[in-house]
Length: 198
Image 1 (cartoon, rainbow, N blue to C red):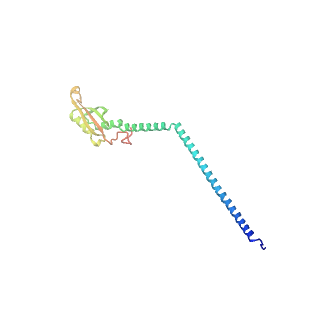
Image 2: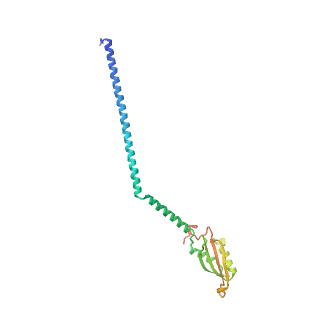
Image 3: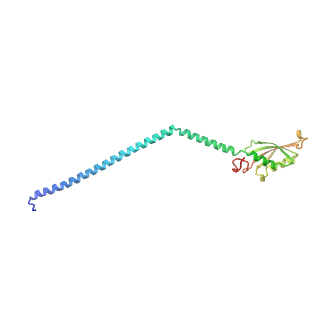
């Protein structure tokens, strides 16, 4: 088909066609920008809603912890822990007397008689009192007590020896008082030897 339209009209048709294409691209661009703005607004609103929800949960959690007296419970746990530490510390200095008596009886010389045993004021030791036939028996008792082979005491010191007096007619006229300190690894303490049982 032959186009007999004047050149001016043809040019107008071309421009009209180009304008229509540009207009379609312009509307597509505007729609795309509008979509991006909508998505951005939705994302911002969603994030704000999530932040508000999390803040509400945090506040509710803190209120729940406060209502459950967590601080008081923690204080009680600390008190119990301190009490247990104190018990362990006290027990670490306690003595298994049932086994200790048997071991002391084995090392007392034949010419001595144990008359008393008490906790010493010196931490980790005891005071022993005995009747003996003479001074030699008293010193022999002291030597036996601090003998490292016995694994009971690290040191034994004679506090007092006296002979005669009210016991002068007795088989054991001498009395001796000895202060003995437990050895560090003696098997007669609750804690120092975990295998020991009373």
